[in-house]
Image (cartoon, rainbow, N blue to C red; front, side, top):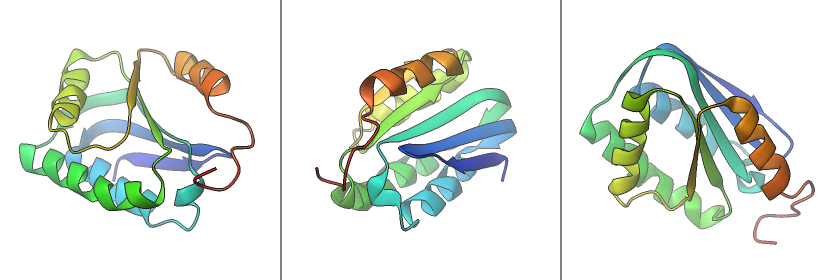
Length: 132
């Protein structure tokens, strides 16, 4: 898997590198959704700035969306932040959102620093228990 997962106090950051795939996104989300602290997450930062290529299928996008439905019942407060300056990756993300399966709001950024500043402005430092 060409993705690194880093748990942070209010969220999780996934950094994709090299040639990444929809399968990488799927498998890394399964790890996150199954984690004991998933319900405490307030953001899922997906950094694609180190990606050199991307391959996915429509079936993988649909599966990712479908797998988000259950975890959204236990944590409806997650924000998805997508960082990329590649038009092809933004197009894939927009195709995924257009499926209407993702229960989470998405924000797009071209620079990681902009996403980090968004987190500081919009995600409380002490969000409390899920549902608070």
